[in-house]
Length: 281
Image 1 (cartoon, rainbow, N blue to C red):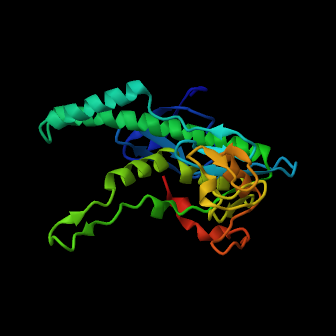
Image 2: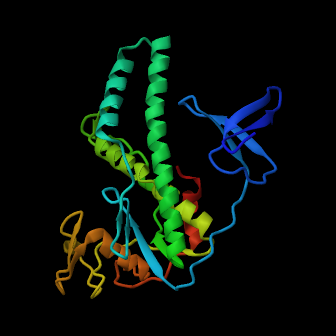
Image 3: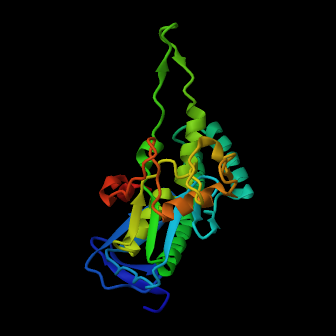
């Protein structure tokens, strides 16, 4: 119809107008979906071509974290946008209002839609950050190395611990702390970032064994648990090298360095060892 609006023929419905968020590609099929926020989307089935490498031979290591979403071996610290203070306050208010609603009522349905819109806004913001970050990395570096993390296992709910002394009761299993960590991992888009990197830079993404990358000095190679003083501070007990802990780990990842418990340096991990990343988020 014009540059902002178009229309599509939906079987058993007719012609439906939709707003163009980008130029319509050449596609053989499309899919219409609706999310919990009440939004309708029209998605075309198209496989975009991979982005060509810059040809500079540059290699970058990416260390994913909770406080810092992605730390690069170049020293850059990238943070995925999260909830604002206003959004957190509104979410708390809506959840309290939902708790007072009668189950199955129209009022509870309206409150659920309002909550879903808040979550949809945060999800769209995270996806937008992942797309921009992955495109920037692919355009700047020839080889991108990331940790081979098993995110599905890392975000799994802890199992209950039965109390042997008191049958029928359970011991504390730090479920609340683990739930907070799981939310932090998923909110930073670990799996989605690697998946989009693989889509845009075919055969240029390498997975590195994550063992002891955060405890190994990037200068002298000394590995000790005391090297990492805190979440953000790294100080080598051998040579005195100081750096941001995530950046130090990213440098080790970029070099393909991973130290085993025996002190051996294994080679890069095969990309087939992390099939879970293709189905996350």
